[in-house]
Amino acid sequence: MSNKIAVVLGSFHKKEAEIMLQEARKVAKENSLEITQEVWVPGSMEKPLAVKRILKSGKVDGIAVLGIIERGETKHGLVMGHSVISALIDLQLEFMKPIGIGILGPEILPDQIQPRLKPYAKGAVLAVKEMLQQGR
Image 1: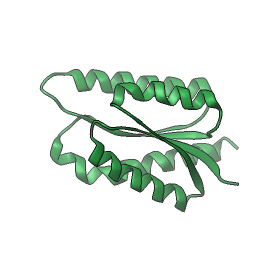
Image 2: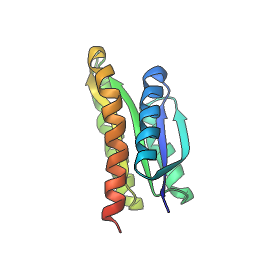
Image 3: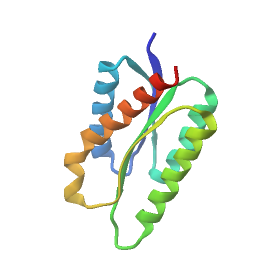
C-alpha cells in the first residue's frame, strides 16, 4: 500500500510551480507515493493554512510544499520566508506528519530559479518519503 501525500503550491509563480508539480508527480510515482491532493494557494503566506487544513482532514500521510520566495527590493521576502518555514515546521511537529519543504528562497534571484525548480521539488517529495519510512 502506498502512502498518500498532498502537494501545496503557490500560484504567484504559476509557470515555475507547474514545472515543480510535474517533477513532484514523477518522483512520487517512482517512489510509491500517491498524490491525492494538489492545492494551489495565492502565495507562500497562505501555505501554512492550506497545510493545516489538509493535515486536519487526516487523509494524507505527508505533504510536499513547493514554491518560490524571490528576492525583492525590501526584506519582505526574507521575513516572509522565515515565518512560513517556521509555521510549516510547527505544523509538522503538531501533527507528527512529514512536510517536505521545496520553497526556493527566500532571497533567491531570478537567474537562480530555473535550475533549482526540479531539484527542490524532488527533494521535498523524497524528504517526505524518508521521514515516512523512519516513522514505521
